[in-house]
Structures are given as C-alpha cells and as structure tokens.
Length: 637
Image 1 (tube, rainbow, N blue to C red):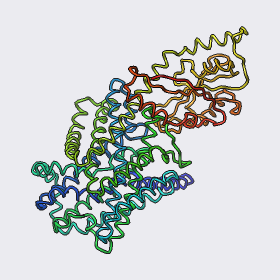
Image 2: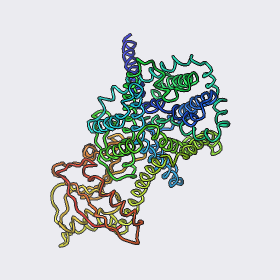
Image 3: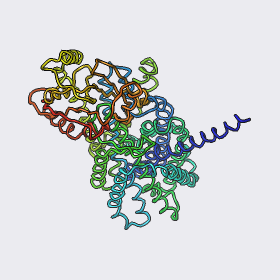
C-alpha cells in the first residue's frame, strides 16, 4: 500500500517534468521554424505574381511545403538525427566531435565539414532575427500604412533591447517562451482552419504527386521558387542543436502533437485564401485573420519572432563554447547566467558580433522581402553538411555498410542539393551575404586550428623531456649541488599542454628566480569528445618523484572549465595543499611574425590577432586571481 502511494507522486512529478520540457521545447526549439509562415508562402508566390497566380501553382507550392516539412524535418531530424547524439548532445560540432573520435582517417574531411556547418549556422543566427522581426512588424502596414516608415527603426530598437538583455541571463524570460509560442502555434492553426473551407481543393496539396508535378512543370521559375520554399524549414537545425537541453522525447512529441499540425493547417489555409482571392498574395499570412484580430496577431508575431531570435542567439553561444573547447576558436569569455542550468550562457564577443551583423542586415536590406533572398543559402548549406556527416555517422557509429547508408540518405541528399542549387541562383540578389559570412567564420576557425597546431609543433622542438629534467633537478638538490635551486615552502602548479615535456614557464622560473617549491604540479587540462565529464572522474594524479606530481584534469566540451573547483577532488585522492600557499604559473607568449616561414602572411596576422583577442587563461580556467604568476616569452610563427 505504501509503495503504491509513494509511486503516484513520483509518476506525477515525472509527468509534470515531461510537460515542462515539452512546452519549453516548443518555445526554444521550434521558435524559428514557427515564424516561417510569416514569409515563406508569400516569397514562394512572388515569381508568379507578374503573370498571374494559377490554381495549380498554389496547390503545387503548398504540397511542396507540406512534404518538405514531412521529409526533412520529420524523417531527417525528428526520427533520425535526434537519435544520432553524442552522449545526449546534438548539433554539428557534437556530431563532428563524435566522428573525430570514431574515425581518424576521415578527420580532414569531417573537420572542414564541421567548420562549414558551424559557420553557416552563425550566419543563420545573424539573418534570423533581422528577417523574422521585420516580417512580423510589416504586418502593421495592414493596420495603418503610415507605419511603413517605422518598421526599420522599431526593428533595430527591438534588436538593441534583445542583445542588451543577454548579459542579464534569459532564465526568467525563458519561462514565458514556451507558453507564448504554444499560443502562437494555436493561433496559426486557427487562422488556417477558418480558411481551408474557402476552397476545399487545397486539400489536394496533401497528395505528394502535386509537389512532383510542380517541380517538373514549373520551369525556370519553379527552380527559383524552390529557394523560397525551403524557408518553410528554417530553424530545423535547432531540433538537433538543442537536443541536450530538452531530450529526444519532448522535442519529438511537441513536433507531432502541435508544431507540425499547426504549420500544415496554416499553409493549407494560406493556400485556400489565395485560391479564392489571388490579390491576397501581398501578405497571405496576416490576411488570414479578421480585422479585429490583426493587431493582436502582429503583437503575438513580434513576440514569437523575438523568441525565435533568442533561440538562435542561444544556439550561437552554445556553438561558440563547443568550438572553444574543441580548439577551433581562441578562449573566449563565457559567463554562466544560471546557477542550475549550464545551457544558460552569455558570450560577450559572440553577442557583439551577432548584434553588429543583425543591425547591418536590417538597414542594408531594408525589408524582409529583400533579406529573404539571402536566407536560404545558409539554411540549405548547413543541412547538406549535416546530411553528409550523417552518412559517415551511419557507417562509423551504427555500423551500416556504405551502400546501405547511401540508399537511406541518398534521396534526402538529392532533395537538399536541389534546394541548395535553387538558393545559389540568388547569389547576386543578396545570397552572397551568408556565403561571405560563412567563409569569414570558417577561415577564422581554420586559421586558429592550423596556427595552434603549428605553434605546438614548433615549441615542442625545444622542449626538454620531463622525466630527464626531474631526474636531473632532484639529483642536484639531493647532492646539495652549488647549482641546485633553493627550495621554498608551498605548492607551485605549472600549466602545460604537453605533459611529458618540461613546461617552459617552469624553466623560466628556475632561470630567473632560482627557486623550486616543495611541491610542484605539472597540470594538463584536456577536453574530451563527449559533452560532460562527472566531477569525480575529472582528475587523474600521478606521483613522478618526491617533489613532482603530474595532474590531468579532463572536461567535456560542454563543461564549465573550472580548475579551482576540480582541484577540490585532489584532496580526496591524497594530494594535500593549501590554496593560499599555492601559486599557479602561466606562460604568456608574445607572438611575432616571421616572413617566409610557417603560416602564410595573412594567416599569421589573423592568428596573432585572434591570440590577442582571446581572454587570459587564468580567467578562462577560473584560477584564483591573487595566486597567478605569469612569465612571458617571445615566439616567432
């Protein structure tokens, strides 16, 4: 009897937790894809407007949109990629980390694929806020045409407020994201439902044959239209990227019971509306609603687009943190804005980059119609990259044969490649913007990775084997040699990335100060190819000699690299030290350009600039600020 009563509250608690995650995923995961109806159908119809929109065009387009959602979002992301996780974490870099761990032979290809996908996502994170907010506010033109002149300044003001609030943390605001977005999806479903009856022939769009007919009969205009059709799945990457925050089941359930039905009903309603009155192609989304509901829908749409913007900004922060931990970017300042949720982070450098990019895009393009042409390339490009990486995932992780993996993903790759080709036709109309953004970001990450590898190899040539050094120094002290350093009380911790070599900062300390602490720790910090490492498993300690200890601290690429906190585990392993009698020694490198050697000249300049931009290691690793000693050296690259 007691067991039965005890189980009931647990069951209720689990249900409440699941519902909370489900509603939360609606706001964060589906915020971006949920704003696509604002502009996707409108932009798809635009190429046909001059010669008159025909019923077969409308039905074919709606069919194409519904089946694009079905094939790409439902089959690829919800049913497949949500299961392709790296210890519960998703996203391009999580998949890259997993594949790099599994298959070393494909590392160069995988590496560049991961960089391209990540760079395109950052470009998406710039375009999404600008496009979504402008699309929502342009609905006010239907309320009063006088509002036209205020769309740009109000959009910019919203962006200023949105990016300013990032430093305060979004935990409190996030509680409202889910419920507001649920109302948004219900409102979209209602708007579609009340118009489907305007022309029941729109239900023919549910037959995929009409989508195929459109592709084969629409001609050149149809190929151009495909780029706009792909706007229906913008934000689909968020399903995978936010996997670790909500889990597979809540995200999947939210898609099937609310998001997909609401999107399908809304697109069907827009199609029926235009079939009945082709003049409504000016703004078919807002014209779904009666006049009394227009202003509330504009307000709700603006709130939904701000939420969608917040989702991609948070995703960019998470991606930047993964990139730093995996060695693709220099150490950036990362602030945790929640004591309980490690996903709530703020990256000032990324925030400023996104803000500047969004403001430039708003004023450079001027309206959502112009910006929509630039949007599709970043989305389709990122999806094609994910599909290519998924092919290798099926082979390396799930053990599928190459032919089986090709059969499963080949049709999907062809579909996405066709969409990408259609979007590439818009290069001259603004499509070059995401391409340039992605190229700059990819070159930045590649330069940092390449430069760090080269610098590590160069400095390793002059290193002294640690074992040789310890034997020599211990022997000189025991013999009380005249060249032996003075032994001083306390503990010295020397940070190094090469644990079997003597840290340069240790050699500099001996050379200039002629002292050695009673207890010396050679500390190496590692980042694993999995998201999280439990605190009790992070520290590995090895006694090297009477005065020397090797310490390895391992973090996951989603962990907060707090060395001071990790050191608390050492005491349980028998390593006794007092933090106020411990000094942390760091080597600071002053990088100098050297022509005709090492990296190309432009990469040298970029690498040095990135190194100067990165934050101090003591701040990044959360070392006690009053216990850090830095010794500098000049290194030519």
